[in-house]
Length: 105
Image (tube, rainbow, N blue to C red; front, side, top):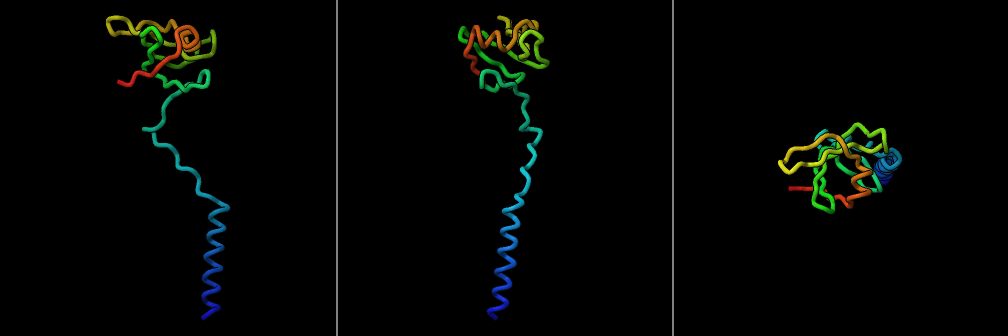
């Protein structure tokens, strides 16, 4: 009886150590959780999201990156609610009118 218990414990320990040495790979993120972001100045900005500057103006940034400063280009929201052309860069807006706050509602 003691031998059977020893063998069972040994097999259990071998399985535990094997699992600890080879942890399961992390689960791949689902498409719903993948968000296109760009990190500038240590802050991750979500592409396509609306951001408000210190003056209350709202901007929306998108890829591809600007050739000027290698940051995403952005559009300012007009008074009528529409958006202008891609005349701004994230670096220019954050550096001149920042900090930027993500608009959530």
